[in-house]
Length: 140
Image (spheres, one colour):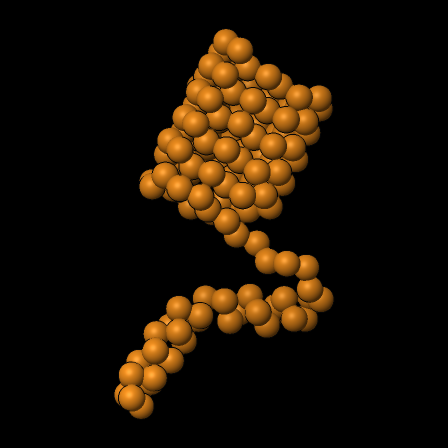
């Protein structure tokens, strides 16, 4: 495989685009890559998509058309982002996105001990909120 770069693309300083291992790595027309970005092998980036500095897309990821990827964001390999997705800065994309919209992840800086406790509780928040709402209804 090789690298196919469409018309009117911009590639910033120290950006690395790995050639395809099985198929080509593809940047469609009007793709904007800021400085210090890593594009893995076999990645396909749709037309009119922009990626901010220090972001990365791992091997075989597919990014749709008209997407915006914020600075420091990471997209795991073999995932698909549909057209019209916005990924905010420092977000780690761990699963495919099939619905256009804005997506975020990450937590503010805190000491590691607090972060570990909060990370363990984070997955329980929806269940806790539903239980609290149910309890509040029962006491009306």
